[in-house]
Length: 115
Length: 112
Image: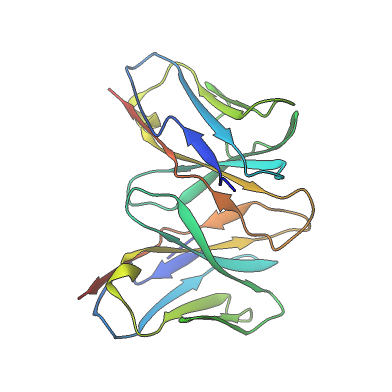
């Protein structure tokens, strides 16, 4: 019973390149969340998606960042034209389709380093 | 403190001692949750307490919630070296919302 799977675990990009981070939720979960964590900080909400729908993207920068959760396949967080300030750990979490405990199940994170 | 805030920011104790971490928040909440994060890893859910609950236990963990003071505490009894990690409180607000608001966490070191 695999948990939330994220890849890549580590990603290095040069300024101006694109970063794509993937997240496969737990089996049976249809809600996906992306969070960003800076060093020595807590997690900051970015976006909440259900299959084929962005429900809440209030925490995501308006430019260069986008997220999707297609009908088939993993959720993708895409960062275009990366800058040094994008260096962070990006965590994906999932939850089941009906109101449950409210607990989120987190992946191990993708650590992005921008040179 | 966290957005919620936690204090202390760092805590160092001897194995066998109890560890207490506090968390404060600013809005009304549906529930408050505690997570643990080992260095370089993802977050693991520890315990959830609902806004109408005052205390909850799970193994060596005890969580309290005081909604009048907008604060919570996490007590880890008889700590072990394996408890060394960062601990975050996070709260959910709003009907049907799964969004969690995290604080900066408490870094706990348990010395063998």
